[in-house]
Image 1: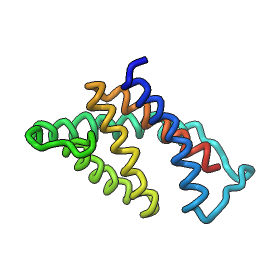
Image 2: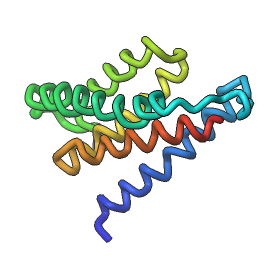
Image 3: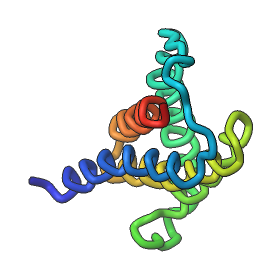
Length: 142
C-alpha cells in the first residue's frame, strides 16, 4: 500500500477522534437527540456544498496562488508556506459563523486538507476529507 494512501487513511481516522475530543474537552453543553431536526437542505449544505465551495476557493484558488508566489520558501514539517497561510485565512473565515474556539480548531484540519491537495495535485482528496470531517462534526457531536 502506498505511503500517501496510508496517510490519507490516518487523516480520515483523525476526523472522528478530533470531533470526539473537542466535544468531550471543550463543549460544555450536551445535545438532546430528540430536539434535533434533520433538514435535508442543511445536511446538503453542511456536508456537500460548503466543503466543495470552500475547497475550490481555499485550496483551488488561494493556496494555488500563494504557492505560485512562495515556491522558493522551505516547508515546515511537510507543510508549505502556502498551506499555512491558506489555513490561517480559512480559520479567519470560520470566525464569521462559529464560536472562537471551534474556528481556531479548524486550523489543523485545514492543514490536513491543504497537505493532501498538494500531495495528490488536485482538490478531490481535500474535498472528500472536508466532507467527511463536516459529517463527523455533525453526527458525532449529537
